[in-house]
Image (cartoon, rainbow, N blue to C red; front, side, top):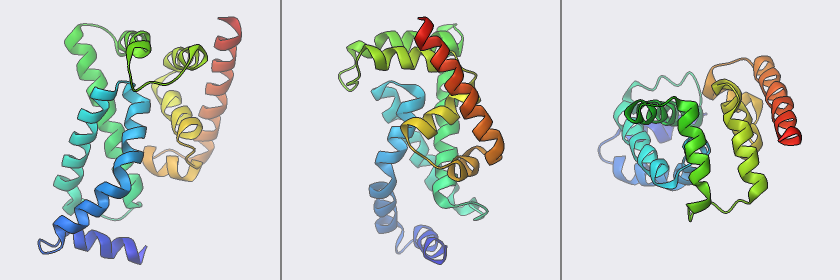
Length: 180
């Protein structure tokens, strides 16, 4: 934790800021992109959301209180940015976020950055049917292999509630996949 506090000071110090921010980018760009991509599904949209996420991180770092790990704080920003993006995009298209997700899943086959098969598409369709919280928990646990404690820090939910959400999500996905 001491190392993280020193790193945050480097990020805030105008003399060391550029180098520290490059280190932050090289460390977290790929995991944050993957996290965002799991939520918004589209590569180009994920890039846009990632850029907005890093802008917000840079902009609000001075307000970071250290109540959580820097990792959790940045993931919370990325999650909120991705969910806000989806909500705005759905509103702009005059459809629900669920309808937007289904449309995006249908377009995944044409996405050159998607390397999944029919089973992956079926899984994405099953996930899209879940409530938003269960989707997030499932994606973070299943795709990103985050620990419940890490997810708890990101979503601000107890570990017990997360385990229950994940369990319910798995059951619903199993039912969807075996019945479809």
